[in-house]
Length: 173
Image 1 (cartoon, one colour):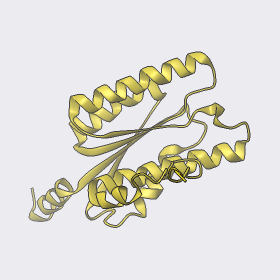
Image 2 (cartoon, one colour; image 1 turned 45 degrees about the horizontal axis):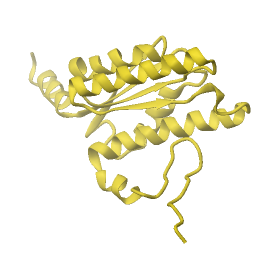
Image 3 (tube, one colour; image 1 turned 120 degrees about the vertical axis):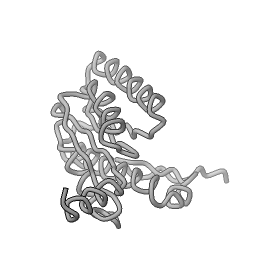
């Protein structure tokens, strides 16, 4: 291997990897929104890189995230999906969530579950906003968890939400 190729390989291996796994089933390109947010973070392309994969549905997220961690070396993964509105969809989302939690425990690596339930709004514009904001906000949270955890601490107890407007801190007056 030439010195130039070896240097490029070593630089690539030295970068932190943030995984983004999304689904075909979602009615919005959540992965693109997450990747766009990460592209705006300091160090994108130099300090960290994004590894990405799309799977059929949210029940496939856990294994894809686990593989990103074990095979691609991701330090954190953002797992994005959309459960449908029916009771069976909610049951499957719960089971998918359990799978994501199990993958976190098996790998000792954070996997941020980002689900937007199709019935969170009947208004397509509101639903689009939820998709975009939740996807981007959790991607930024993943970045902060790795590179600037004080940003999360500054927001502790403030009722910060991803997707909808912040709830704000508890008013005890």
